[in-house]
Amino acid sequence: MNDNDIYVVGAGIHAFGRHEGVSGADQAVVTTRAALTDAGLGWDKVDVAVGGSNTGKPDSLVARLGLTGVAFTAVRNGCATGGIALATAANALRAGQGEVAAVIGFDKHVRGAFATDPAAYGLDAWYGTTGLMVTTQYFAMRTKRYQHEHDLPDLTLAQVAVRASRNGAAHPHAWRRRELTTDEVLGAPMVSDPLTNLMFCQPDEGAVALILARGSRAFDLCPAPVRLAAVTVRTRGPGSFEVFSPWLSPQRAGSPSSAAGRDALRQAGITAADVQVAQVQDTDCGSELIHLAETGLCRDGEQVELLATGATDATGRLPVNTDGGCLANGEPIGASGLRQVHEVVRQLQGRAAGHAVPGAPRVGFTHVYGAPGVSACTVLMRSDR
Image (cartoon, rainbow, N blue to C red):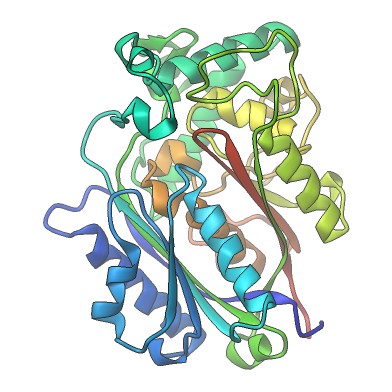
């Protein structure tokens, strides 16, 4: 341990789903207080705060949590919002802006697909009028190309949804809790070939908060702090095929997920083989399969064997999305990346609410991907003083 090590010392979550009459800010306040209680702190002890939301204004939470004058930064980075909020808070602590930080993510989306203005992403109106702002088409095109290049059958896609539903069914904070069968998933209405409507996650509501502490302070606050061994953020480069891109290079290049995953493992001083529990962005079944390879957790094409043999189950050699991921929890954008970290922290502490990974895992990994091509990854390690 050194003074610049950053630890997760408290965590709180508001169940994801639909909560009529409860605002996104309401959910954020509840979960922040829960995280503070978990760390044995009051809001007045928080030196730095970072909030992420795409439907609310995070810094307005101080009106309800306390007007302490805390430095509060708001971030909005699409589906990568939670991961980038976490990186921002960790970097503030490492820069000496305090010893304790709160990271809060929340959102409350209306029913139906996300509606996005092309101009907000630097695109002309034609991109929207031709239907390309509908993200299901992008995810389907990317999946179809990946299946062609690496010989992945539709059955493997369905097995992702089946495992996610099984994990979600056992998790009290998940939204979708009915176990699915491969026949149901493959036979569901087609949205964008090859992805059926049971292969996609859905927008919903929820909130997550984490409390971070620096150096030895962490061990004063928590009997089992989890070290944030790495947190990385990367954007797209030339030739990278990303959502809301108006062009596609004939030559493939590395993605932001590849860069963020590689850097996270390097910063933590580990290899992918050391990871014992992982969360990867599963906006849809194809995305999980692609992100497993892009982050280095498996080889291209190896996903067929991993899913068929149960290797990504909670009891497998590489447990993935043990709380059901986005497929079972839905995606309140600001909270989603922090949900991943919350679940891995609880697994490493032996406090998982759903399926627990056996064998007291020590190393966890998270990955989140957002428009228009930004990824954030973390490596989390169980700590002993």
